[in-house]
Length: 67
Image (tube, rainbow, N blue to C red; front, side, top):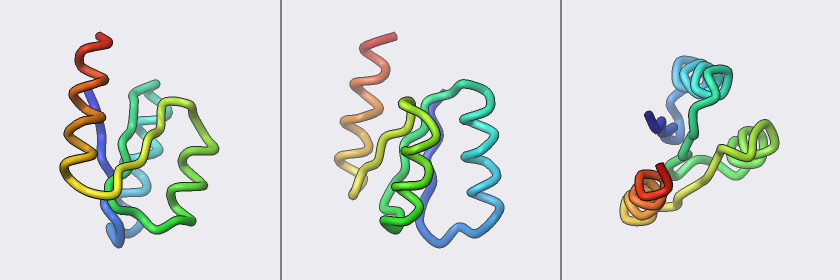
């Protein structure tokens, strides 16, 4: 399962992202502030970042074809 984290979601979405990472799940950050992107990407190689919905969909499709 892929997760996404949208900017301004507060501690709830940050907690959900942490759960995804702790569970070894890939995570795609969608339109997050630079600081969030840098932080979450530093935690795992399974984290990617998309600036818009189209890019996010491409990343999801790429992940699904790898599986």
